[in-house]
Amino acid sequence: MYGTGVSPGISIGTASLVRKKTGKVSGIITAGDEERISEVKKFTNAVSNAVAEIEAMMNNRSGELQKTEIDLLDTHIEFLNDPQIRTDILEKINVEHKTAADSVIEVINAAASMFDSMEDDYLRERSADIRDIGSRILSHIDDVDGNTINTLPENTILIADDITPSDIISIDITRIAGFATRKGGKTSHAAIIARSRGIPAVVGCGDGLTGIANNDLILLDGTAGEVIINPDNVTEEAFRIRQKEFRLGIASLSDLRDKPAVTGDGHRLKLYANIGGPSDMDKVIESGGEGVGLLRTEILFMDRDSMPGEEEQFLFYREIAEKAGKMPVTVRTMDIGGDKKLSYLQIPEEENPFMGYRAIRLCLDREELFITQLKAILRAGYYGNLRIMFPMISSAGEIRKAKKCVAMAKEELSSKGLPFPGKIDIGIMIEIPSAAIMAGELAREVDFFSIGTNDLCQYTLAVDRMNEKVSPLYNHFNPAVLRLIAYTIEQGSKNNIHVGLCGEMAGDPLATRVLMGMGLEEFSMASSSIPVIKKIIRDTDMTAAVKIWNTARSMTDPDEITGYLKER
Image: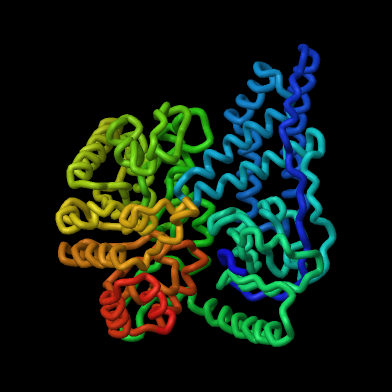
């Protein structure tokens, strides 16, 4: 069976099933004040115990945990202490007279569902963290969550509906050869930790995993996303050969960290990373990344009851700028609204939020919020090499209005005597077909383009990639999508601005040579993908890449294009 490979590697091991009890709403209503006070105490004690449990985990394993894992545990403590979650749970106990357990289940499910509905992969995967802290609280209320991960044999492959970040951190990593889950995505914290630990992992396998029993022999390919159950001898031996070849290949990739992304015939390309916060910068540097092509700022605005102020935002951006040093960091302005609902903004419900009141549209309508963010970015730019990027641009008029806001932000900073760089590059995301079609005209307004292939593909093909009925139609190798990308790159070159690409396509090894052939010079992807893409670039002549693109562009079917690229 196949899922999504989120952490590369070839593993052979025995299955260990992770079974968890899930909390169900009882519907019990508390009758009097004594019961209500008792339920409040249950909840507050559970939160305190959950925080203490995490802190003990950090103290007891301080020498073993990596920075990524420590940052994750700190984030979970922040979630546990989140004032909005606490207020919502206490309101259900005190006003609706529900039990502590029911209140936690309902509030956590609502918060997780909010993240689940988001289009952005990184933010959508945060729902796993919300559910994780909910399970932790419940376990301290009445032992609702009974995790069965105990002592594991060596070469264990964990099989689960989902594996939470806490599971990955709390188990004996040395005994884990890999894991496969029914749910999950590339940007979940569990996947990030698996990559940082070098544990092969496949997620999103679906119901095919339900047929696996404890101690079944499992072959797992975290690169191809393949899971094989109880193979025959021939299949197992072939897998062992693949495992040996993969390990030899990894050794060669590590040697590329400090080498440039230069083609065989001398063309220099740039490999950047997509990040969500300061802690991600360590991985960018470790992987040999040359900068940040996309800093998602949305995490600053999510899961809270008020807008972050200028100072809080400034400190967030400055920490990233200082960690990056001279490396460029592209800061995408607020891509909120629509599918990313914020209670404190009081945005009305929309029938089609993906094409509604969001991103630059919301920012231009609520200038005070936009200018606050711009001032914070400009101030942080004094400490590093930041660039400003506007999302969801559909016309030149929007760019001009946004640049006017930048000018207003500069004027306010100047009046207060606060430092900011004299020149800061301004760019836009090309993710709406109208922007791609007008790329030549829009290029005269900005310093750079960044092609967001996730949305560009979705809007061009009229496909909601979260809708299982039509998601197979979502394919960045569709000829229409490829032509829009190529045209955008061509127009950027003609107008002497640099063009990058920051969607999932940038980290797809099958797409690398096609994008090179189009003339793309900046790729921005998950940090873990950088070494693989760098090797492809270094092993390719630009003349060969151009020939591959010229052949692919004459094809009219995505499957035909994909098949051709697999043969290269």
